[in-house]
Length: 323
Ligand code: PEP
Ligand code: MG
Image (cartoon, rainbow, N blue to C red):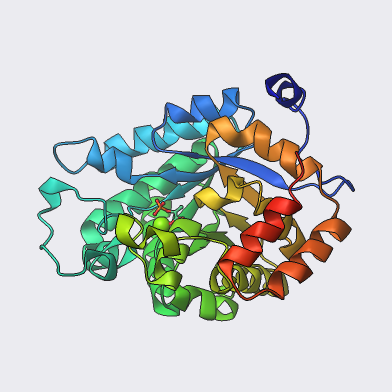
């Protein structure tokens, strides 16, 4: 198996009938970008910027963030790198931010909600990303979006910061793209509206599964309900990709499920443009993608979508898995 996988190093990522898709990596630190390159990732689909904050005793300054983003962009050498703005709260705590203890942290003041409520800190992060965009193909991704206003507020902040940078004569990518994570049921249901506000989508299946199934992703007692293969989650994914396509924007997936060999044929059928996976799973994902034609994937997806339960769906997918 390992030697079969080696044959996929340096190859394009294509389905069995030759349709190309992008295969990117999820990373947490600038150094991980090296890992993405070594593992033959074609870009970074998710740089979780919160690790910069969690590995610190205080808020990293604009300058510190700028060097981290620049370093990662330079390591990627012109390949796309999607950096997500601070995604804290829920299970990710940062002691020095002194966030209030909440009854329901996963439903609380977190991610984009926190950032828009703390605009000075958020400005520093966006400014660091914009400045770093002069050194590589950086794209900005917004986590936990639930409504159109959040995307509009980020765009407003970005245009203010761009105007400042212009006035100061500081370089940045004037065509930098802004993406929206679709990882809440609300975002999924208004994906048609959000598609008008974003240059691309990235589906976060870890949270989309948690919120769609109403299951804390860290709670073992309800873990039996935590599966991307529930008809509800699969319908949601299908709809998000369709809305992206309808609006003409690319759709990626950066949740762990993007590397799941059982899910991959469905993602091919739905028309996912970009898979973002843990670097060590790049070659396996490329290998699985190479085994499916669109026609076979469509036939399987049609059967899957006619089933009513997660158990039936996973059984069918396992029975049709390609080794
Ligand atoms: C997700 O929710 O699928 C995701 C990629 O983000 P995180 O796991 O960092 O919440
Ligand atoms: Mg998430």
